[in-house]
Length: 413
Image (cartoon, rainbow, N blue to C red; front, side, top):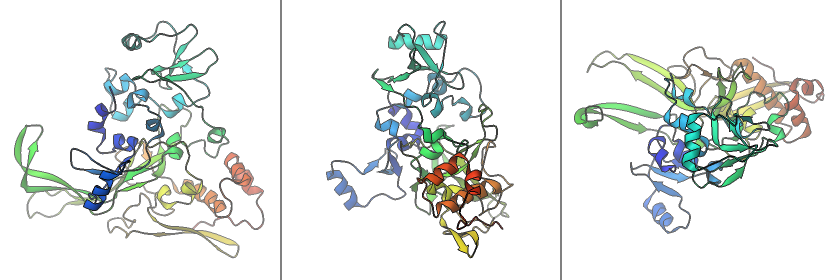
C-alpha cells in the first residue's frame, strides 16, 4: 500500500494528499508557454490531475521528503475504524505529533499485545527483541511500527520498506517557559495551507448532472466557481479545545483557514422572495505541510492574517509616550457584517455568533489578541532571536517589568 490509495479521496476539500506532496492548486490553468517550458524542464513545476485541476509545486511536508507514507503515522484503527461509532471524523484521529516527537515514550505491555497488533506484526513478520516495547499514543493507540528500547530511545520502522529511522525529540525552544505552552506543534511548524476566501457553489436548474445516489442523469447541476486567487500561505491561528487533552483544559493554539464566507439564499421557489443568511466560518486544518523550521515570532505576533484580521497593514504607531496598534484591511468590508472579506474576526473585536462548523474551535478573544499584540509591540524593536525576547517567552510579564524607559507599551481602545 502506498499514498496513491489515500490520494483519490484526500486530494479534495482540505487537499491533504496534494499538500503533503508539495502541490498547491491553481485557480487558472498555466499558459501554453509555461506548460511547454515545464515539459522540457527536469524538475516539473506543474501537475495536471485526472479531474482537470492544475497544481504548482511548493514546499512538501518534511515527512514526505524523508520518504514517509501516510500509513507510517496513521494506524489501522484510524483508517479502518475500531468498530465503534464516532460523532465526527476528528474523533477517530488517534495520533498526534507529540506521540513520536517526545522525550519520554509511552509503551504497551510486552505480553499480551492486543489481537489487532499481533495480526499486523505477524503479517509483516515483525518481532521484538528482548526488552523492546511498542510505543503507544496519548490516546492509548498501539504504534505497531515504533519500537522503544531498554534505554527509552525509540525508532520508527517504515511499513513499506522496513527501514528504520530515529525519532527526534522536540528542541528545548519548543518547550521552554510558559509563553508558548498552549501552542500545538503544527501552529509553529506548518509551512503553508491552501486558502481561498471567495469560493462559490451555485445550483443551475437548466443543466444536467450525474446523481451518484440514484446512478442516473438528472435535471439540475451544482457548479463550483471562484472570483479570487488560491493562496498557499501560512494559516490563521485560533483556539481548539480537546476533551482528551487534559494538559490544556483551556484549549491549544491551532491552525485555521476560511471554510465558508458566503451569503446563502434559502428560497427554493423561482421568483420567490429571497431568504438570505450570511455565514463567516473558518475551518480547522492540519494541512500536512510540516517543516522542520518554525514560523518566526513576527509572523504570528505582527501578522494580521495569523491573528484572524485578514490581509492588510498592521502597524504599531508611537506618538510621544503612547503606542497604539492600527489595522487597515486590504480587502473591502462585507455588507452583511462589516468585516473585511477574508477576515475571521474584527480588529481587537470578539465574535459571539457562529464562527465555525465545529463547536470546539474559536478565534482569539480580545484578551488573547491583546496579549499577542503586546509581544508584537516588543518585536517592532527587538528581533525574536534576541536574548530579551527569549526571556519574554519564559516569563513575559517579568520581562516587561524590567523594560527600559524607552519602551512603549500598547494602549488599548
